[in-house]
Image (cartoon, rainbow, N blue to C red; front, side):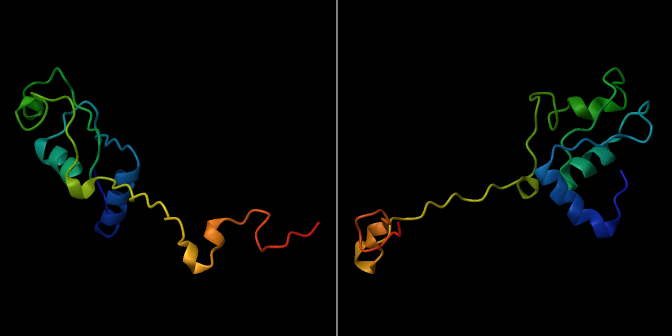
Length: 113
């Protein structure tokens, strides 16, 4: 994976908001552990395809740190998309001349016909 250093922050932001897969330059070769660790732990890539039948190079994929026990590993906290907190506005205080928050006919507001 080649990402220019001046675009690293942009790449991280993209992986927070979109499902991302990182493809190897040569799909017939397995992804080395260093590359896998970099794209998943530094950039937050969701998927790195491997050759399942090549157990010599992909041995790290079936260790305790990766997929021996779990089928999915969550991203590091700093690389996750954090949803903004939903803020529900409170009802205005009736003593603030907000007409109790109601602007329906029958109040002091004149609606033209």
